[in-house]
Image (cartoon, rainbow over all chains, first blue to last red; front, side):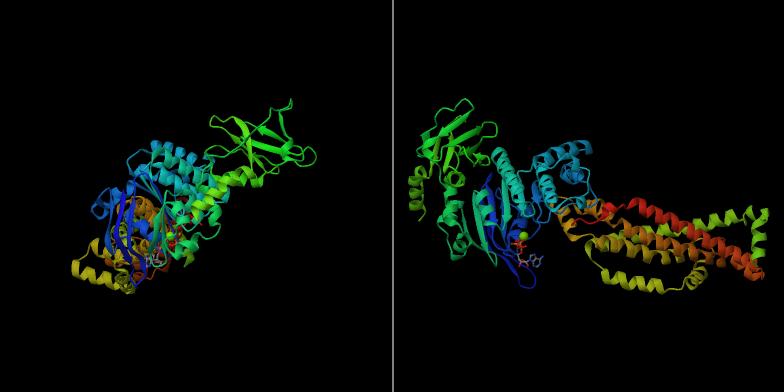
Length: 355
Length: 220
Ligand SMILES: Nc1ncnc2c1ncn2[C@@H]1O[C@H](COP(=O)(O)OP(=O)(O)OP(=O)(O)O)[C@@H](O)[C@H]1O
Ligand SMILES: [Mg+2]
């Protein structure tokens, strides 16, 4: 548990970076600090590892005031991904990633072995291991920064805009990787971002900060979306708000239609969808290609699983040329499909809940 | 005069004994080495301290300027009068010459390390001694070597005047030659000092290149 007790920070010159912040971050949770540039996100986060000393108030970890813990000891137990990666220009990628283990007393070979593991986790090719940071792209540097923080397996992980310089596809992969890690080993993660979408996707809890370092709302993503506490929060989430809220609705209760048996070529014919659509399932990739037998043959589309959100289901239907999406059951057998009409009742229910 | 010099250099007798060229060269190098070593022992920790903490920057600048303005020959004469003849007065005078460039190099090297890199080192749990040894000094190396190189060249040149207080070194040829109106010998001294300075400078430049490959580009 990380606790902020009426913490404020003013810088000389009068800048109020953080104003009377009260926050309880549960152990094993994923908390995202979100807000516009300059609203005190980095400052707040750096008070956890004593890189910033509060002007007033206290920060506690498991009930212990961090100001009473030796700074070096505290920081070695907290992984930190810096906003600008902050790599050592004179050390190779491998030695950058192994730095914390070396500080913890591992020998060079052990540290390097761990570093290779960490590089793999963040999806960096081992061939980059012997390069220097100046020889990497911005996104690769950020991933090295994430690997360095993960390598020593700290119970607490602080990440300051860790994915801001990577492309959307890699960002999604890294986000999923971080989510998976957190689900698996229950780290306490505190992440800073100014991207509300990223916050809504990743956070169990979201703290919205406004300029001047004033906390607007601290709640789970659905509450932030559906019950914004202040005008500031409403304006932050207003774009696509209704659509985003569907991310938090399940597909439970969805009525579906059973798929007929495939023909000898493995095609499933669905004449009811019009134009004589047929589906070709790729079981390994869990995708489906639709064709109308004349011209259209779609790119591979994802197959929906029971745990997916209403948003994912709706998106799949809207993106499918046949206006239908396939559904797998809990065992992974693909046995049914659904259309927009099937989603209708769920959508109506969702609108009632969120308004 | 050139001929005088060449005949001096060609005479085998001038290459042996305590007044021979190798012996004088050895003395010259020895005083210079002692002076640069002592100056480094003073200036490196001081430069690291000021560069790392930012404390005393103003004092550093004014003290270096004062030191640079001191006339070495005057200092040495004064020190000889105060302390008597011996190794110490000339070496102290040389140390005073060597300290400012070394100090400036170390200070600038450490102070110019990108603040974000130092911040990262601290944030992931390095203590100050580690930050200095593992981050700041390696990154400061090119500037430190530059300062050292300047100090060595100045000391080699100035060590010539150690002969003025009877301590040998290559300066002896100059002072003895002047006393005897033997300008060939004066030229021998001058040429040898210059050659020594050039050779050392080349070696140091090479060392600097080996120790600071282009990877020391700061990222981004
Ligand atoms: N060392 C400092 N000295 C003075 N002012 C500072 C210092 N660090 C931050 N500030 C100020 O405090 C405020 C909050 O800064 P902070 O870095 O926490 O913002 P942020 O929310 O992380 O912004 P960004 O999204 O741009 O990174 C800003 O107005 C900033 O100018
Ligand atoms: Mg920031």
